[in-house]
Amino acid sequence: MAAKILYGKEFAARIKEDAKKEALAIKEKSGVMPGLAVVIVGNDPASTVYVRNKQKACDELGLYSVKVEMPETATKEELLAKIDELNSDKKVHGILVQLPLPKALKDAEDEVLNRIDPRKDVDGFHPVNVGKLSVGDATLTPCTPTGVIRMLELSDINMDGAHAVVIGRSNIVGKPMANLLLQKNATVTVCHSHTKNLADITRTADIIVAAVGRPRFVTADMVKPGATVIDVGINRISQGEGKKAKLIGDVDFDNVKEVAGAITPVPGGVGLLTIAMLMQNTVTAAKDQLGL
Ligand code: NAD
Image (cartoon, rainbow, N blue to C red; front, side):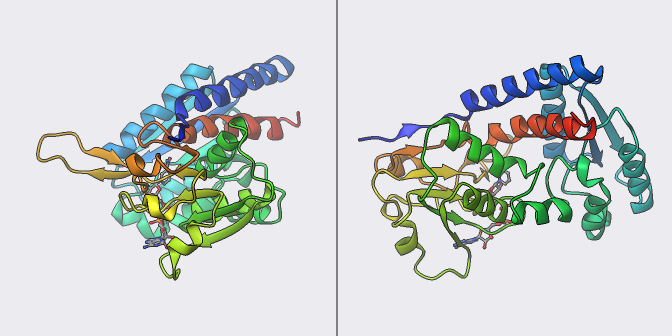
């Protein structure tokens, strides 16, 4: 039997609807609307699109939003000073610095992210929030893996006692994904580029989360019949000059969908949940800062 397709659109709409209701309740109680500041340095085309989409989502929910544009030539000191300013701005409850930073600031990335007040760290990348997540006490957790958890919950896919295999151990997807699944009482195996016999491990999984960054990496023979397969990967495949690149996931969707019980498509799957969770994190951060 072909798998149930988990389309991100409907889950993202649910998450945003809930965040909007919560934002309006905050406004009613405190007179303050949750606010998000997005800082973009330089003019990387993909980053410009991401920032525009984040602002569009804020507008859709009626959240206060600020876009801070800094030139490619901005210095580390100027960027840190801007973050300090946003840290003390009462109208701003969430701060996001769009990555990647321009080449000249690449080495300062950690210092820049660590300068954000942890209570305003809506990306959940600050070491304080990473630590809180690992001890199971986090308020703000990374958007993409948290979106995956919400999708599994809203789809009634059992995580308690399930064997979840996460492929990838990055700080932004793989590691927080594993921690969040642990908190849902899954038995978690984290696989990575040094893992031996990967297919033997994935074939025992009830849930597979692929965050590798390699097109069609997870094939049908790696999947247990009926398993849930979540594809976080976004691989841009060039279609030739002047043509729009094609987006392909880390899962061989056409073949895996014949074996899996549920599967997310790319595009149209997990990607849409990330911005929805960013909105939810902004609202959560506001609630926390306003003491509600
Ligand atoms: P990354 O490059 O930081 O990490 C990739 C991970 O894959 C590493 O931990 C590595 O050990 C593992 N890996 C590489 N080759 C492997 C192999 N042969 N076998 C097993 N593991 C292997 O990437 P990332 O930032 O975690 O992103 C992963 C993918 O998810 C990318 O395609 C990225 O574009 C996508 N992504 C999507 C969203 C979203 O919103 N949907 C957000 C973040 C990242």
